[in-house]
Amino acid sequence: MTAMHDYWQHALDELSRCPARPEIEPLPLRSTAFATLYGVRLSSLGPYRLFGYLSIPNGAGPFPAIYYAPKYQSVLEIIPQGTANLQRSRYVTFSLAGRGQRNADSPYAAMFPGLFTDGIDDAASYPFRGIVADSIRGLEFLLTRREVDSARVVVAGNDVALITAALGKGATHAVTAPALFYRTAELAPKTQAYPLEEINDYLRLHPARAGAVRRTLANFDLVGLAPRVTAATLVMAGAPGSLLDAAALRPLTAALKGPVTVYESQQSLYKDGLYSERWMAERCAIADVQSILPEHWRE
Amino acid sequence: MPRALPAEYRSKVRKPGDFDAFWGDVMRQASTVPLEPEMVPDPLRTSDDIETFQVFYASIDHVRIAAWYCRPAGRAGRAPAIVLLPGYQMDPPIPKEWARKGYAALSVAPRGKLRSNRQFNPGYPNLLTHNMVDRHTYAYRGFYVDTWRGIDFLLSRPEVDPARVGVTGSSQGGGLTITTAAMRPEVRAASAGAPYLCGFVDAIELTHTYPYEEINDYLRLNPERRADVEETLAYFDGISFADRIACPIIVNVGLQDNVCPPETGYALFERIGSKDKHLYPYDGHGHDAGRARHTAVVDAFFARHLQGASEVRR
Image 1 (cartoon, each protein chain N blue to C red):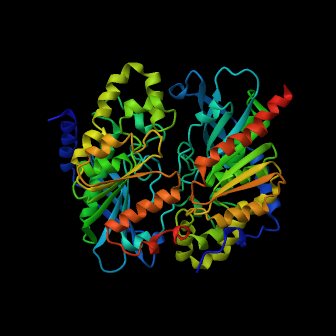
Image 2 (cartoon, rainbow over the protein chains, first blue to last red):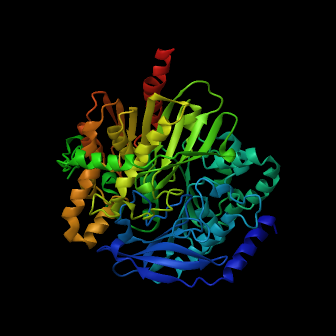
Image 3 (spheres, each protein chain N blue to C red):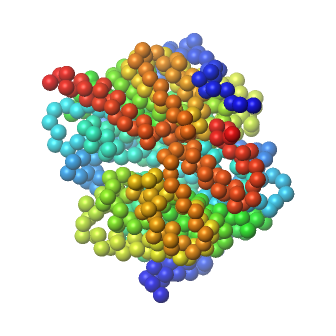
């Protein structure tokens, strides 16, 4: 067994001893003729109380589901900005704030930028260990809902989404745009752009901690976790020539165990977003994707 | 039926008759609050070439506002300066890349954003509709002033050339660029991308995506308040501010923008008062508004208007 395996097994064991105890409350302000929105509070490793938005389509289910795993930003969205609200008419959606994000920021309020390197020199207490556990807890919760068709469950987001698909159970599909944990120590010195610049900042001020940082990051390395991903996966790579383009991500895409689609960004949120919307709809057997696209994306 | 061309769209926004009086009064209230700027060095984010500071200053209603401030290290003489304004739900970035281009750069976190949310924190979603029925307490009254006070901070700095101050941002940052350029004559050049907060009442019919959808959510639950909402929003609409803009300005929009409908970008552009204005529409692009191609346009624009002045002076 590897150190990475042990690291996550301990976290998962700890999580399993922590009951979720969900509280679910309707939110009339965000409920529509086609979907009801709920605020969900539930416990994760720590214990730590989290918050998420659960949207259930009106009508007879079960429905495919999209789980929006915790993002690297302070704000928790109901569905991602720019997504047609009508997406909620066809999918169960669940978005979760990991510890530190708004609505889950007590007692730990994360800073952005800042979270990426907060406590990074100690793998055992690194906040992202908890955030990954939070994300897995969110997926577990979603799968308890009778409205969800367990054969059509998409986990979407950044690296945390892919790690959730690797370590959690029940994701049939994953959409991931790696940004944080792919060969981090190797790639950070090649850029001055955040979030990887956080690593450069940290090591500039604390060069003696480089070894500890590498050891922590090794537990999150996507290539190491990829063989545990059996879900069909869409990898949203950067534009050709960028730090995380398809060529750079090849070791990751080759290591994923399930079927893989690699999409290279066309540097257009329209083209990139349309591709992922169609990919999810096709895999979830939603025939009329046009009807749930934003108005300005429809043909 | 094919969609009408965005350029042909006619906005419903009507500027209130007492618009200038309302904002004049707000500015007077803000002017009674001393800026009380504070610069805290940030060694974690400072390097050989860039100095980074956490900045704090007071704004209207005595709300303490945070910002990131980056400047080129070891620069002699006064530098051109840029105010960067944030998107609706983004966390304000640390503007190192602007400092690397030679600017003193201030990235503002208006009230409610992280580090500026101790006294005011309606949250997200919610900010857009917070007290939306009363222009005197609507969330964006203070939020707008917070960004305008960023100009005061820059003008307080000895390393900043007060004659070379620009403003830029995209999405909400684009809308705030419009309002800042309109209300602060010290702004010498402005670049607004995918402007949000422009054509509120148009956007909620043209698109059904968040964040504008927050308004539709509110009106669905409170239909009897529509008139009050529309009255308030007219005072805060970038289209109402636009005729006050006199500085050179560029605007970029994506013709497939699913967040800020391109129709509203065109409507805004038409109302901009400056004679030196250019619109860059990007077909095949959404809310990025062609950023990958447009960044070079923005860099050249500011270099011409803010760094070119330095060459003339020498």
